[in-house]
Image (cartoon, rainbow, N blue to C red; front, side):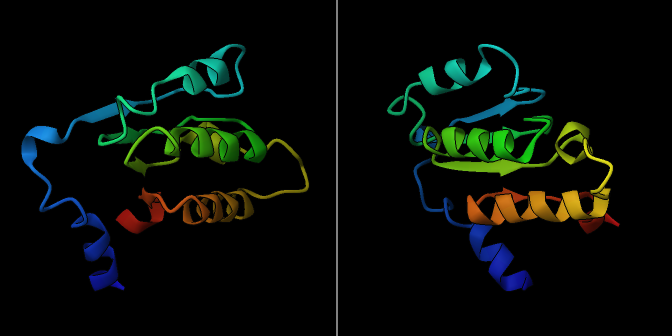
Length: 122
């Protein structure tokens, strides 16, 4: 598993350094008015060789999280994503935080994102 993870992080090693830009966003709150439109309006060509680091709090619901990841993934070459507290919060009494965390991990895998979940740092 470690070798597979290392291979993912080494994908861009041979790319010319002058072509790589790294952007960071946090607290995007994709479910707020105007944010989806702003994200969709980002240039697909301007950022296509760039890396985006997402530091959590993309959305309060899984459908919005999925939509946000899909839109942003279409704009950037690679995305590194660490879920925030809003991404992991539970809105319904019937769901537990553990289930929500697993659902967020599923979304990350489906979007093929490099990611870091809190339990991997223990």
